[in-house]
Length: 326
Image 1 (cartoon, rainbow, N blue to C red):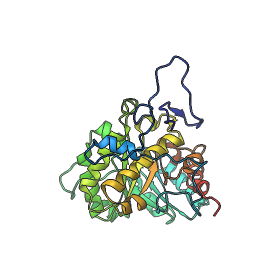
Image 2 (image 1 turned 30 degrees about the vertical axis):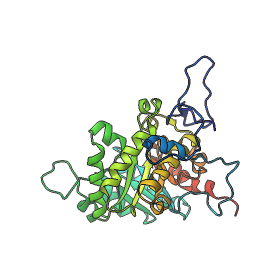
Image 3 (image 1 turned 45 degrees about the vertical axis):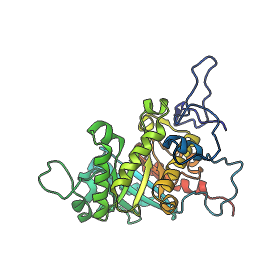
Image 4 (image 1 turned 90 degrees about the vertical axis):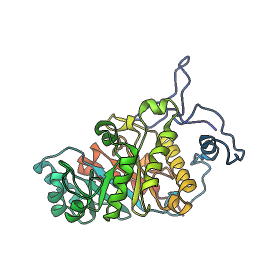
């Protein structure tokens, strides 16, 4: 089975990139390119050998028809917009107006995450069709924690979701896996849904450590949370966030498959089936449909493109690319 290369794909070009003759051998980003050993492995063998023996890569040419929508999981398509530290009262007013007038497919859960200071403005003017997320929350109950926002405060102003574990919180602010896991557990306890982000740095992908990094981040969530009922996993390769580079559909699918298999083996088959695994990293109106066709991509977490109402609507409506003949 041919492995997916780590060549970074421009957002405007989703086709694969072949290395030039004489260039160093490419990595899959998950391990060095090689044939997978399909033989059953003993439970006493190493963790990563076991993972590699169970990885499945879906091929559109061989996948049978799965009915109405091509999704490996049972959850509804999910699209979140992370506005990050962007916007003014006037620009957000216009963005909300654009979203209110957009025609959106009904079979998609849609969430937007404004900056904290604009949450109330957005909540009071945005259609109820779209729910509100916060971009962060504190690890516990509020109090003498300057600059932090508690989960209780978020629910008080009408937030339904919170984004946790984003790479900018991990690699710029310095939050570690265990801290993020505890924040997720507390948020869930306060009836907030959690968009739980994971993803590898470029050097980690090139070193073949994508699985190792993502599984370690997943384990921190699994060790802390009481339930997976209100968790959406967002796989966001750090090298693709805001760079104009995007994982090819095949690269994203391969990691999503591995994440779902990890959930099945380490949590439960039920959780693996119903937990939505969405992709983030330079998703835009031009590439979302091709990404959405992949069976294990259950939606998107969108950055810059979510600041443009028409583009965000197009990404939401990319759910139609999943629909196949019954």
